[in-house]
Length: 415
Image (tube, rainbow, N blue to C red):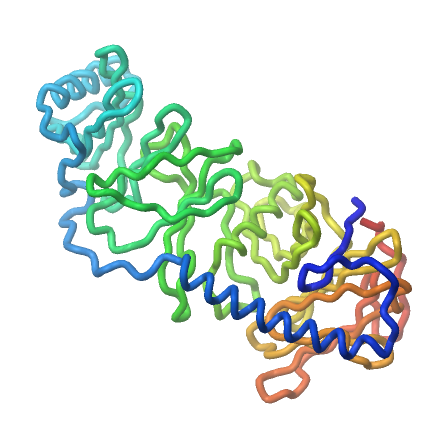
């Protein structure tokens, strides 16, 4: 995969290699641009990220006490038709039967006919929720299952689109990641049923629950919406904290970076995949991601460098992860290379320098730099603690790790 690299701020990594005397000035300009870009990103996040919801009202016993909602909530004839349809489907053995009492959670117009959500308590005491739709005057119950007393939402599927019936006074903010990777806030109208969301991939949209973590707003849960499920199901992709810990909440862009890892490992349908993003940076039409992977499959690597570009996904040379630093190297056939470094919360600042000790890039969290051709044999990556003392140092070759004696192993394949 021939990756056309960009520098850390997104400018094209092309043209003649800079003279050594230019590196200091260019590094200064990059750091200034990074401060401006970071400030703008924070301002945009504050404007777009859902703000804290008001304290939730009492919801009694969860879904068992939800009120009837929707424009057709008072249509007793529709409720009667839907109840009879549920009982008829249960007699065929295709659905769980309702209890003695059936009540309405939602009824409203849709195409080709009204949609109805029913609630009952089964003979075993479990709360059951059933979904019904109407076509040409006939009511058909398409799903019925036991639900948790406080589901995040009830899922209605209509003509390939998903709509969510959310709890009244839920006290949480919800966001949905569509199949094309676009996140949008779930706006809840008075009747509790959200606008339709369509999925552009086979996995279905992701429902995210937004809350406060480490004093910041972030994703605290993710669920998957599926056409045959009454409520959101467990997300097969679990974006978790790295082994070295974290001090910021999970953000939608970080989830997207983790989402790119599963296809590269061909593991999205082999059970839950736990991914922690250690570092990520942009490349033209894509991303480079260093991730920590855990799964039920023993053949999956513990750490991986994943490259996405224009719809294609591949893995790069194995990253070096040690002592609170994660370093990925993306070589290019023209001799340039991207060095991507992530760090643990214990590392306050990262410095990347060449063999001569001259600093190429520095910063906190994740840093990256494009090295012009001809690249040096290796780079030195140092991690500094809060007091400025060095807490970690790695020497990394552009085609693989270099041990402390300077011996370089066989180069990894070029990407």
